[in-house]
Image 1 (tube, rainbow, N blue to C red):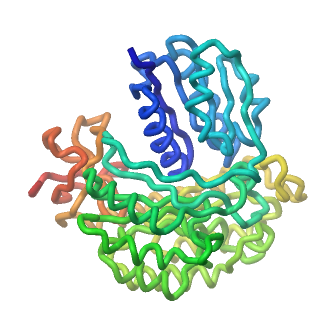
Image 2: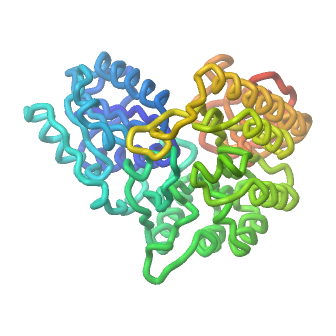
Length: 436
């Protein structure tokens, strides 16, 4: 009987792509993937370290894995494993810690773990990491396929620990990406999500050099691909060529995530962000004018060291002025080894929390208004694999990144459907099936 494995994934879409790839690798080596509740032989926890809150979530997930793993075999991988391996290993129930540079060795390490080799740490220097090859897709229960086309980051933002966790930017060859996305579509995936830590830097390390715009121009021609969705892109990466393909192809999902972090130029400079508030505003206004009903998201940090009330007021004013459909708001979290961790002018926790609350309040209002524009409309949705936990209804994801719940049969899962939006609630969007 084959050994069973379950995965718990925290953090970004890149982590989700990594987990999907590792699942395929392990299944090729004889493991059988099961839910965590099935008491697997091994649990792999893929961690995040972007904030202190993320690490708390990591710890909770690891404790739960230790409770539910049949033989207590818990493997911790990902960014927190890379940056703080000793701290991770010291947690109760952790048998193996594997860094981002060592994930490709996971099948062999798991074989050793299940055959009696004791607990240990396998974390190499991230500077030696290479981009993993894209494996042929296997049958998946997931509606959306995540494809990692780039890893690592060339920026050194003052608050960010990610370069220590992920290393330098490195890209997958465009021909390999095109072949992989084509295979995913043939396997039944109507939506493919391109992921990367610094996706806009894609191709700069390759010979010959290429770009995100050139890659997208290849991918949008793949027959049968309904939506190609992009993960986060910094404003500075939106060249004229990229804008042309993003605004001109119906295959590019009408949803973009463009990190902001602050609306104050003074704070942006202190953060070492490569853009100004005016540059950001101009880009967003251009995108919103070119893409009807664009779903637009951003990250914002509240309480960065030295942020004054005036700085925050500038951020709040910019957020209120722009057509966001959602925000990810984070109170500043000091990360060891980053420039910002040693900066003076720390904003007290209560002030940072209040600023975060005000931003989230504005974001919630914008989200309700954005969803309100969909009332009565018929939308194409990709029906996700899991039903809504509260209602038991199906959940469909629109191109502009709104989840719509609606009654329907299991046979619609992982397929495209047509749904009319019938109600907008504070935290939910309801609909009814029009045509499968």
